[in-house]
Image (cartoon, rainbow, N blue to C red; front, side, top):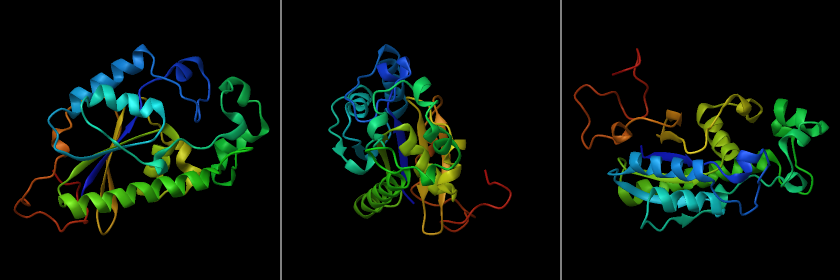
Length: 227
């Protein structure tokens, strides 16, 4: 019943230039730093049980600005997809590559030249988040909230899994830089609570310590949508 807040890193110089950064050590640009500071204000006061991050610089830099003084744990499973020979190239150029159409329509079949398959990326990212979620719940209880800083395609793959979508449909999901996506995992099913959220109060995501009167069993969906 814990909640993971999936934080996409702020905008980078590569994002601004339309370049596929991949595993390059790109940094946040001015807009990205502003996004990181803004998400820090939204996270302030939340009882975060754990903070984990992709090893790449842009994710670590986002957390440094958002949660100064917090030492995140690096989780390799949250790193960017291995785009191989596509890394560092303009998206406008890549869009002319025949593989681009497959990435758009059938990503589950894609293996990037000299890189990783999108299916392998999704598998290791989902495994990392679910493993950390179980660990956080075991150590901090079912009401715990934790943060994982990662990348756009990685977060989209995690959301697709939570929604029960085939990976081929994950391009229907959009995750903005500096946004929060919240997922609550239960024994029955995951619940996607926020998606690509860039504004508003996050305090309402913190679960109540005691169930309200008449609350449905943990993991069940409220018929009618609930309150």
